[in-house]
Amino acid sequence: MWPEIFPEIAEITASRITLAYNAPFDQGRIIAECHRYGLNPDHLGIAEQWQCVMARRSQTLGITDHLKLAGGHRAHSDVTATHQILREIARHGIVLADRALHLTRTPVHRGTASIR
Image (cartoon, rainbow, N blue to C red):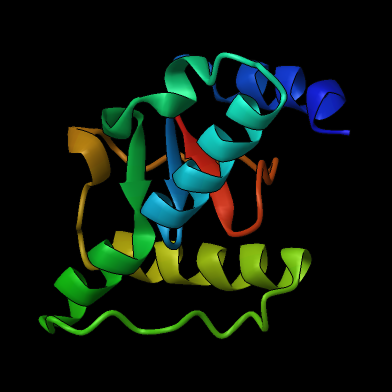
């Protein structure tokens, strides 16, 4: 299944910063699955191509703890919860990856969205 969906994920995220609530975890899963099937993770294997929404949320709140996502670890709920957090971060003027925040409506991976 991964070999069939990864090319689409790679295409959707090409030339974008990928946002994930727990970016190191999600990036690690993508890299592991690519290696499992002998695929090149391409740009999704580069840490600088990811931004961690959980870390930015903590930064916005002025705390050092990383808060769990209230999405229940279900794809749609996690993406919805992450989207709500991103909207709140944007209201506080935090800019991710030194770019203005532009969300796509295409969830790429559990808790993941992309910015242009």
